[in-house]
Amino acid sequence: MNDKKQKTILVTGGAGFIGSHLCDRLIGMGNKVICVDSFFSGRKENIKHLLDNKNFTFIKHDIRRPLRLNGEKIERIYNLACPASPVQYQFDPMLTLETNILGVGNMLQLARRLGARFLQTSTSEVYGDPLEHPQKEIYYGNVNTLGERACYDEGKRAAETLCKDYYIEHGVNARIVRIFNTYGPRMMFNDGRVLSNFILQALLNEDITVHGDGEQTRSFMYVDDLTRALVSVMEKDGLDYNPINLGNPDERTIKNMAELVKTKTNSQSRLIYLPFESLHGRIGDPQRRCPDITRAKVLLEWEPAINLEDGLKKTIEDFRNRLKNLPRVLVFSTSYLPICGPAEEAVKNIIDRAQGWEFDIITAKFDSKLASKSHNGREHIYRLGFGNRWDKFLLPVRAAFFARKLSKKYDYQSAWAIMASYGAFAAVIFSWLTRSRTPFLLSVYEGDITEKMTKRGMWLFWIYKIIFRKACRWQVVGKINEQQKAWLEEEKKAQTVKFDGEWDLLAKRTKEMFQELEILSTRSQ
Image (cartoon, rainbow, N blue to C red; front, side):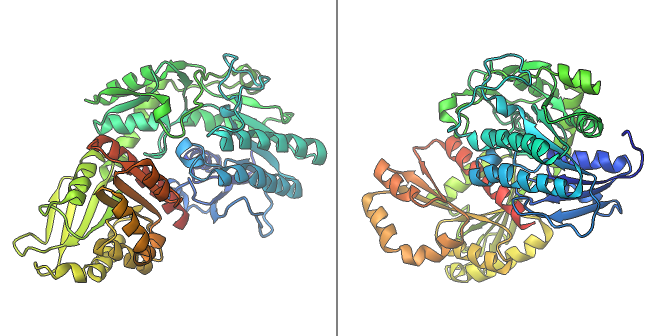
């Protein structure tokens, strides 16, 4: 810092992966930090260690609305507020776009009013699928304004324009950096980033899924190198709005990265290759991505200092430690093994393949010979009742209150109701008891969904209405023709899976739903 006195600094998106590391650095430099986050993609766990620090203040706020501060003299504003992984930013594309336009506009207006220096964290995604290599800041990009990624790419491009206009029209001291792929501790397990996917899959000995042929390239910068650069850009006098690339020019193929992660984790995983056309949200992925950081070297005297092997070691160790406490899913099922039907079989097969979660299964006892509580690896089964056929009628209330008791011990990010039956009613009551803090998925396994079944669903919809309304997402699994699939998918929250015995596919689609619920759960923090 040029000026060693304590500054008051606002960091939006400060509970996110990068934002929380930036807060750590700024606090470590002796500054006062006001962290703002809506918890759409940020997590309270990332800043938990800072909450008792006298120089740290947290405000839960969505920057799409103007931020009112009570007399605080803010000298610096770092804007990192925006979901940054494909899973997150495509989850709510309108929110992503509005955060980059309305949100950035609000923060620039705040900087104008307070006379604060402003730093906008843009992205290498503004270059699209580049025809120039490596990418310089003067390159305009090769983008698809109507593609699946456009909400993020175009939002970030519009945000850069706002920074330039506020600089010229209103004299706001705005700077722009374009961040290339960044990794490190605190990356979310299931956020869709390539390295977090590879590390998690390798540590769980799951198949490592490589998109395409793996010959596409990326360059990876360790998060500490990035936060050091962000502070340098903010504190360097004489900079204007012209963007600066921040990244590591050590370019690697995705296949090479998968092999490296497998080696570093001593994993037994296989590498499997998935065609892009089979992957939701991945059409338009850039084939080559590598920064030209000449401008950063000249203006900031900065370049990455942490090599990939050292950074990976630290990141893998963080993942390994966090995996000692896997996220838990709360499951409501009228019956469960050893009672076996299509739904029970499906749940068991999905659990076996969902290595990244533990499952607390609450079910009716039905048989007095069964243990009330049993544990089998990641399965924890709680059987409620007296062991007779009447147990299911009392299950909704009993299971809901038992689940509330469990939720005080475990921080559930998602719940799972099996079939639109007694277990689902238990999930509804639990949701009422906890004020919808834990979003739940309703899965319906119908086997052969015939036209008769579909009509029955229409006629009985009023009975299921309360369950469907309370479920945050629902999934219908069976042998479905295209007409039936279209009818079901008219409901925005529904996922249909045409099931032909491919358990790996069904597990993958269900895990996608868990990931969506985890994103939803952050809103209630």
